[in-house]
Image 1 (cartoon, rainbow, N blue to C red):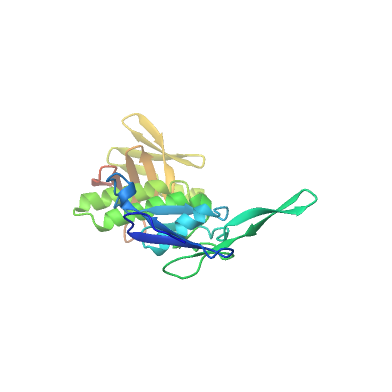
Image 2: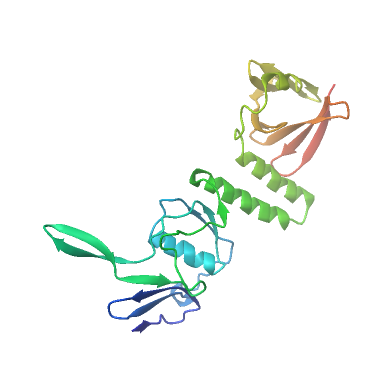
Length: 244
């Protein structure tokens, strides 16, 4: 028995029933969307706990080149099952069929769906956001728009590598850069701008969050002295302030 939905365009999966030889075809059917067709890039986040139907969707979209899979290798359950009684009140789940992807001619049983980008599940969302901003940055038409994307990427990684800078490194940043007075208290850096004080949050290397709308990077000269600060504003502008 062949089940063909009306108006199909993309075959995503086939399930072959071993008992009665029925074959069911699953299509992405635009006729069922009432005209709503989305063309933007798609990202699917996975973990080792992603299983069965979640894997089916991920695998089908991946092989159709319609989505990027980010995260961990999934659980590996591709064969549909039904409950069968084995007596004495016990029920077992036994596969009654198998999946067959139209591209690979196989499935993800036992192997799981292999992500396009492998990262820990807890970091998958941030990685997806970074990839989105990178793609937008690559197609940006102005330098300001590119810098805005860089600002958003940096903001994703605030406090990701705390402890990589020793406290005495902070002292090298201390000074006055234009209207910005940078100073250290304990193991923290602060900025005073006309009496408004904010704590700097570390992003990476010499780059910090200055406040909710700006980031600051301390720049070394040829003598290894931090002689200026570069300010990155959320809307894409970049300013430099020399150290006094």
